[in-house]
Length: 464
Image: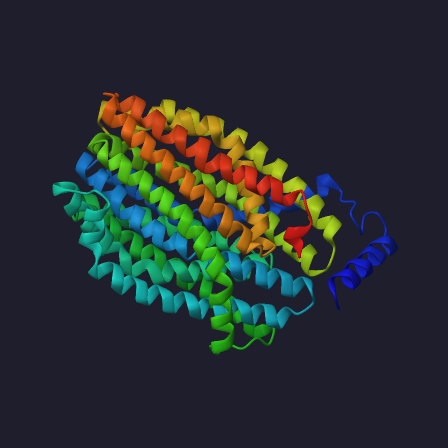
């Protein structure tokens, strides 16, 4: 069927429906449905950021060099995990669209393809990262004691990567099925395991920063098994096969290429930010780690709204209801903006009241406060942008996202170069460095993506 015929058929179908069935959506009911999915989705999204935040709070009391080393090591592992986020996003949209089209078994088998791909990528990348840990940390700007701590943390945590990628792929299945409560339980259980082992290994057994990495490794595999087993059982109950299908695995990998390019551009920007923070000194880098961990944590609250919207919109697109997909997109965007405003206030309050949880150093505490206040002020726009980002991923608008995120990354890297030049020309205080670092991240990295996403959802192109 050609595009014109499809559009005509769609218009006729929409006209035959009641207003509620076509473009008219009960906004209150849709918002409740969105948050009903978003709250448990947030629970599973925060797993990796929560692990790093817990590590940050505990390692910060070892010393500034340990906290700075954690910043380098955790950036490498989070970048690696982030590059594989297509395992969750791609699986979510595939499963949701196939289920929306009435092809449930095929949707579940697409999810299982994602599990096999996650395991293969996790094992290969873990070996490579372990072997290259010290050179990578050195290239990120770590030196002396910071380099030793960064390498120790990265080598201790890295073999938990397959478990975490399995969590991502399994989450894609549960989101597509709108069965997200189990992912919330898994995230809470994983955080409890990680915290208990962190305290035992770091303070009880005195393993230092390596103990923190080992605790996270165990928690990652615990979560992976916690989610993969029921995902496979539910798939089998619907007649889906567990066998690896080379065509399906390669299809998942191929679909993930534009998403990988998108994420690579974004992660390169964040890695460059850490490298600039490292050039600004140990205290700036230590404070950056705390603010960045907190930011990653709260961003997942916003991402939960985007992914909930992604699931709902992808289902409407799979069923051919474009008007309802547009309405859900509008609701998700406003919900993200509102949530960003509320969470931004909470982040600012945490910056004023809770910095002692992360470091005993008054200088580092002051820098943490500056960074959190800047982030809190910009969070509403980030919430709106993140909601639209998730929906465009759910619509499989991967090429547009890859292109615009690459443009954003190039502009942001140029801006960081300007900040580095300014810092060399003017003797800035650490507080100013911190404020400029986070200000530029929001004004360029977040605002440009918000502009591109906002322009995209105004049309119908992204639904084709």
